[in-house]
Image (cartoon, rainbow, N blue to C red):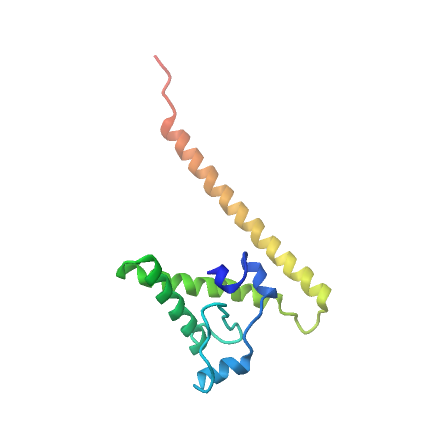
Length: 147
């Protein structure tokens, strides 16, 4: 999906082209063209439930199901994945928007600090899960002393 959007990592969405709000509104009014699948351009100025973003989701899911022969019961999972990707990308875009009281340098520092904090807490949680799994594995495989 990132390839269709034109990025390799979620944080690159900040520099990616976004559709103009006027084009998104014209599509909603049925006076403008539908969003293309390639390049895939979500609109982060509107909600995920907006007609523009729903059209992109529908096009992606349809193409994915055609190409990979997805089972009927798994199609809803694909819809959920698209929504989750949208929400993750939107978080990066909204984090990167400057607040009223800051300049560009302050905004970049704030974004970097926020990302670092998320990564740090993510690593901590991953370490806890890893240590917990290792401890339970050792407990299961610990041999009793020979008598």
